[in-house]
Length: 469
Ligand code: FAD
Ligand code: NAI
Image 1: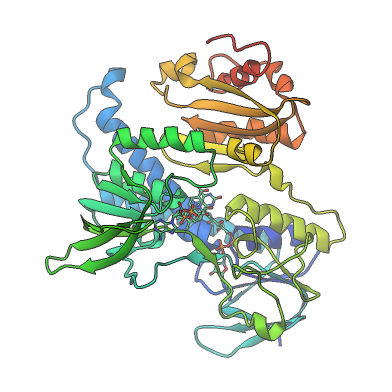
Image 2 (image 1 turned 120 degrees about the vertical axis):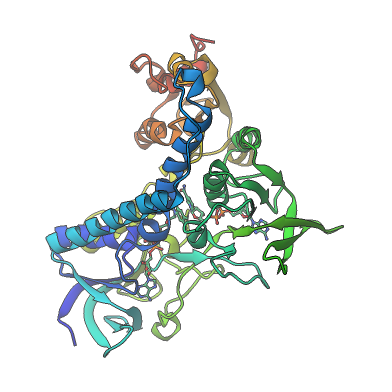
């Protein structure tokens, strides 16, 4: 039996590790149970961080090949050194997971390696790969076990040729033809990586649009931009099966979503990116009496408490967007709640970013949602083609779109397609966090020349008019 802890967290992803650090800062004695060899969860090991390392490197490769000439930089065609690009990715991951080790030591957090399960409230059992089990006595438990890739029935993932995002981050060579199943965030980000490195990419999507949940005007225009880059789309289509052929290639049977004649796509690699599902396997939640919702997520109340006193859950394993920063903020909130403070997450102002080129960034309501909810809104838009800095950078693709309440002028949502959209969106997140109006933004001085001026111009367009269009 290990010492008594105030808090034991199962899972060391962005939800779990951030919760652990805040709880320790607030004076709690904290344990974290992690089954993987390294800390940091999906995000640091096989998600956000490695994908961004490859997105950055592949974007520069593409720019060096096609973008430099127009800027007066003549260089020979760049040569791809994929093993070195993968080294860069591995070093980035190692440096980030090492950072979590350091922070845990600094905050005196105890790590138990092994699979955590919950025999009952107040107890966590740790089963290591080898050796004896340990039982942890703990006042409170936070489940932060995250999510895993969903799969299609009848399709076998080998992580070499038929891959999830995990395999797509470690391919040993650039496939000639990559078929991506699912036009969501993973499909478009990792599809972009391999397209920039030379693959011919076809995306098969069940719905009649890409990026469901994002503003549909943004998604439409963004799809056109990706098509111009060479990405092909088969919308309203589903994959009925994948067969390995004798020559080693894949035959992918694609049917119209509503049924009808099938077509065959040939590919070297298929990436299954149809969403992720909550990870609750092996926790023994049925024994502990922890209830799940209709989609297999841990059911929690507004204070993250499950159906059992003393057991809480955060991050991808509960409802809400599967985003690292949402998990982190829930981690801070539950630590504060357990310390008797008023922990809180504002779900109306959680940004979402697709790290492609151009980037897509969004916060708050989409136009589709405002229509469905019958809210009277006005739209302010400004294109990067009319922004001086964007012209200087040859980055004129995209636009800023701000949605505000007709009566109160309060900003309800904002959507940006463009270079650095993922950095720029935070001005709007902060504005929404303070319940700001579009006039507040329109009257705020923005440095010239910056891409952010397009945001102010979109806000001006909601009032007396933008200046530069
Ligand atoms: P996770 O990060 O999934 O961590 C869960 C941890 O729990 C894991 O370490 C797992 O080993 C451990 N665990 C599970 N069960 C047990 C058990 N029984 N015992 C012990 N340990 C256990 N989000 C963004 O916001 N931005 C991005 O750019 C982004 N990019 C992504 C790219 C990819 C390819 C993927 C797959 C995801 C990406 N995400 C991104 C999503 C992001 O990774 C998740 O939202 C985030 O990691 C969720 O954090 P979490 O703490 O809830 O769980
Ligand atoms: P997703 O939910 O974003 O997209 C899945 C797509 O697959 C949807 O468009 C869906 O309609 C489609 N689909 C579902 N079943 C299908 C089928 N049978 N055939 C064809 N298409 C089908 O899920 P994705 O891309 O797998 O990502 C999982 C999660 O990871 C996301 O929810 C996202 O929050 C997170 N993530 C976030 C990133 C970021 O913030 N930049 C990057 C990568 C992942």
